[in-house]
Length: 275
Ligand SMILES: O=C(O)CCC(=O)C(=O)O
Image 1 (cartoon, protein in one colour):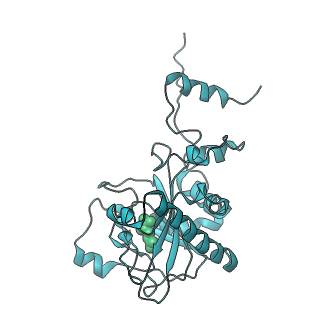
Image 2: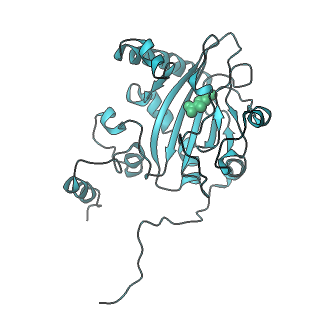
Image 3: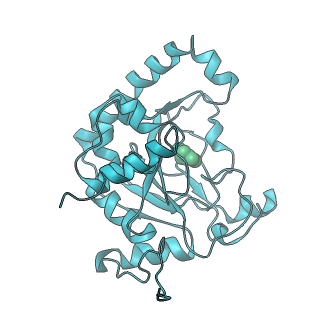
């Protein structure tokens, strides 16, 4: 038997990112966030706003009312919208979002969560507390393992409760002092229909909404498939895996845990390309 020096579980490194994203990728790498503008048009923004409210009302009813969500700091969050309305599946698979995700994370990407965030002028939003999207992680990584894509369904600025970021904080293990955070925070000013793309480890928070209107957004957290989905998206979608193998992986059909070893092996066998 020869001692061949094979390898597995190693993705090609140093892939060339599309030239159009070079500036955005550098912003994400260095300060932790950047934005794509003009991704969603006005009509779609209006539809998504209305659809989110309907899903949120249904999700409140599922648990006996909004007070139950408030008790777990989950009020004004509509979860896994894509399982309720195909327009949110289209958003989670938007070609621009996917192209940036592949450039940031490489070929193997899984959608960890999709949340609607409703930021009302008359209420505190729990997401207005500083956090990382990989919660409770106090270490830094040399390359991103998760990326967030926050779709702005309203103009984002300090008045409307746009998201604030601590630039470069994905490169520091711990949260800085509140005083530093307050002075260093930056709120990008962006028109509705933009997507803020950020390293999920950068500290950020929803702003306080001082406008007269409700400010909504849809956050997506996408990660390397060593990370777990917040909810079992394939189970929620309740359908066969999509034929496109990349999409099946992205939605969780390829990597989510299965019941036992035999099921894990059968799934891999089924994924072999037909000869
Ligand atoms: O809605 C926002 O401005 C921020 C949302 C957020 O921080 C999150 O979903 O993790």
